[in-house]
Length: 402
Image (cartoon, rainbow, N blue to C red; front, side, top):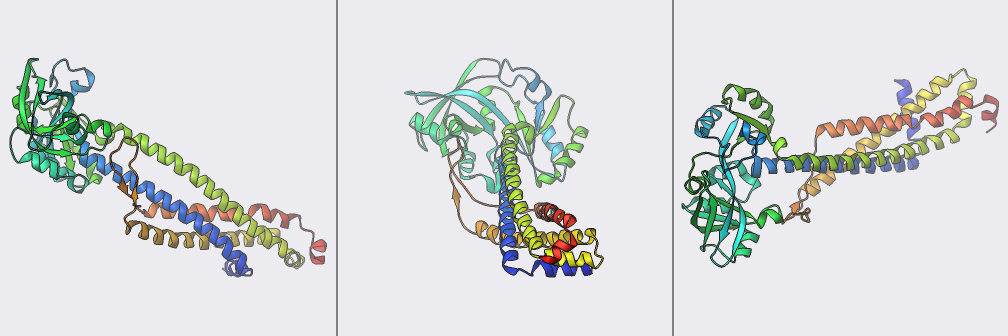
């Protein structure tokens, strides 16, 4: 304890140098924490956005769907989807069960035709899943009447239609025959991707059954109250699912998610390395200057019987104190910066292939503070190793003359 108190006093013997060093450490730590918090927000926000706007927490497919290519629409569809949804809703973790059908078709106004990707959904249930992650107005408009259609903004522009106009949707039935139905444009919506916005259309599930001549669905998307319950529900699924179907979690479906996160983690890993190198050399410079200035002091301690190990421990403790003070300053700065960022409306530009930007936000986690704090203290403590070699080589007579 005496050595700890003595090393703390030594740290503040040169207050200006200590302040500069801890400021460098603190700023580096705060910037690193902010970067990690931003990636944490991207990881959470991007994942939740995919879940609530597209995939659900997991989806159920016919086992043959991924093994074989469909020759006809809904050849490997799910017929008993109502029974499966009823069993799934018996679980407390399940919030909503969404049967879906998707197929290719041709949207026509008589003057122009465009190939489209049609998603047949139950709009109100999609709104329940989407929550605050989607714009619910286009879906609510779609649910108000039968034989209505929602078009991507770019698709509607390409067809030259607006809300209230009619389009004819052509496709093949489950038996392979050509069929067509007229739909009233209920709403126009922006999509996340520019390419998707040029092709995407949505209709009611009941209308799709009539158009396709079948009651099958392609897949069932399931939304949970809490994403953390996903491992629990996946363990329960085998007890209620028929052997003809299987479940895929959202990460298996949204494969781009892992690619995006790997990119961010690689970037953060490089940034961490750079910041820690800066912290290392900044702390080592401080300890080195302290050793040079206190050469006679160390020689006197050795003359009175002090061992090299004692002096090296004292320098190591001084490095630990510098790390603790610098990391604490970094924590405080990061919390201030993150509060300011989360309480201001800073809009970031749209990502590639996206149609709209998003608010800059950060998401702090206790884990990143713990690991960054430990890493900082260890690196600063280790930075005293090279300067301490000078003590081992110090001759008492030469040191006392300085």
